[in-house]
Image (cartoon, rainbow, N blue to C red; front, side, top):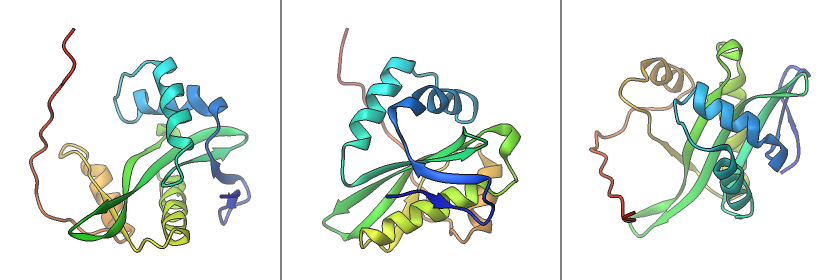
Length: 155
């Protein structure tokens, strides 16, 4: 995917590079409250970026990464393929300026280029501001689910 220019020439959306790892690490920590090591973030970016059914798009303003979105094409036996938004993060000082909207539009375009018509995302109950944002850009609240996890590795 090539660069995407927003309506403002000062915001550029492009595909992630490994040089963006520190910025993504910072966004994950600051915006999403995920404390994950920088070296592991770099490895995850390298792995995800190599998959044709995954995308990480970064929004840059003044040459600096100010937000990103990650999407993966999911396929299941009970529905048409859909893109699942794994993360959307925008620097606190760039929120309410249209960065998130441009990133979501960009990942929707990416989905369309891959023949996918539906987007799915999960948002924590406590992220009420995010819920309002998603509703404002046309997303509808889906069914309520309970999230289960299990850690398999014992150390």
